[in-house]
Length: 86
Image 1 (tube, helix red, strand yellow):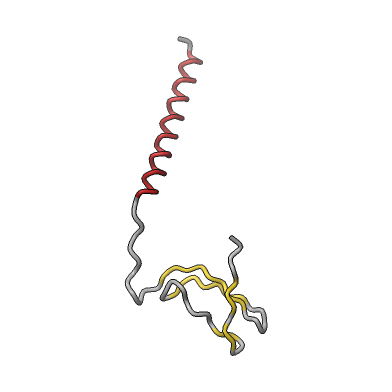
Image 2 (cartoon, one colour):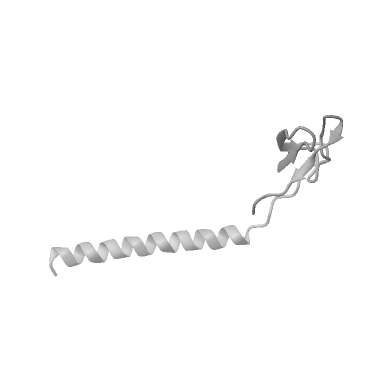
């Protein structure tokens, strides 16, 4: 065997092992259960945007005590939930 064939075969073997490990890792990540929700009273991560209907101010809420927080108030009115683009 010449040197070029040995390099090609070793490169193919390394690529196969890399793809195998990535595939097995992805399958394992899909089978692990989700962690339990935090206890009541702790802040949870949320990603919610609100817009004031009076002045147009936008606020992004990133932490809240519950999953579905109440809208904040601005200009003495409840702010409107901005729908995500997704």
